[in-house]
Length: 487
Ligand SMILES: Nc1ncnc2c1ncn2[C@@H]1O[C@H](COP(=O)(O)OP(=O)(O)O[C@H]2O[C@H](CO)[C@@H](O)[C@H](O)[C@H]2O)[C@@H](O)[C@H]1O
Image (cartoon, rainbow, N blue to C red; front, side, top):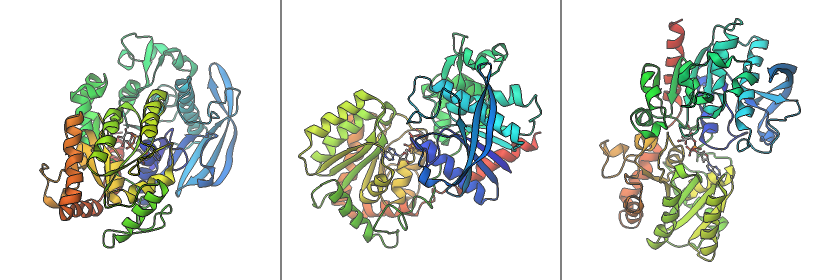
């Protein structure tokens, strides 16, 4: 099948969070299974150009009608991790993608609405005509509306539309004038695509209504968003369209995340020969100036946003130290208040030889943290899937996770899980408060000190688990094929 992925992120060239990992991981796996995949992205000035090969301009001056005028764009192609990518390079004065960042601009809605239109226009002009247009999250949601309302009518009839939601907390809300900017007739957009104030358009709702199939990134989160407030206001709509909605668990790219030959590690290991993991622990300690003592390292690798349980992360720093563990954090926050709070804690613990907080986004360092730590903590308030617990397990780092969303699908508690002993791989806790966190983390630290064999079994079980994309990619293909069988 011919699949066009539309995404604002793609690892490792344009990554803010897990969406980037999923887009490349799923694409690689689909390609391995014999499908023809292209990823279409904006051409940001801040991309990792060193990770793109064969970059060349393939279309000059692609005209895109926006705000009633033809705007020129070049389109470049390149290869990322073996997958063909196209980059839309807006040449006009607004410079939507030369902002030094991917998100966080006051005109994000306009930037990504424009990208959706330009991506559709590109596919139309070059006659790409994919079997599937697979768009992701709010930034590419309007592509689905554009396909049905404009491009289908102009003859681009083949594509079936699949839409994956990585987080219902960010939906893309804008005044309906955004539709006119894209050449859509605002009056045609159904009311269920709008907010209570009908002049406000909700991008995600629109994609739910217009797509042929909607997925989210774990089965448990798919249930939660239909049944609870985790649907962030979309519960009704998701229930209405439940026949075309399901959860497919994310995988990880096991080639990229592989302790056996990880490009960022100097000591490689696997489940059969794990000793080198502890050399990475030494390297991590040296790097973060932690003392070399018989203690477990608890790690957090995260965007520091409320979703991730920032108050619980803060509490866990002090709690882990109190319990005799070391604590490391690699995190960055788009929220200055949260950044400030963590900077204060860093100041307070500056002289502590058992703690290091590192701020910023650092891909290479994240690999060392996964490899060097003993436990990875994910105390999220909600979590659509979560990748850090999967990556942690791949590196023999035991997850301590809140029992929610995809974390509940993937982390199986050593004592309280219903799965067989062999599949138990971590510690979970239910309550999103200090007591809950201490219940999960306390048991993990205690077992590390006092039940080393039990802890080691968890390490082994995690490392032996299959978190590859293979099975999940097959589930997507099944959906793609089903949609075409319905035509
Ligand atoms: N400071 C830092 N430096 C380097 N790397 C860092 C980093 N902070 C985070 N990362 C990396 O970013 C990724 C984050 O993965 P998450 O699953 O936490 O995704 P996120 O919440 O962003 O995305 C959403 O989409 C994904 C994908 O569907 C869902 O799993 C998730 O639940 C949902 O919230 C991991 O690869 C992690 O290593």
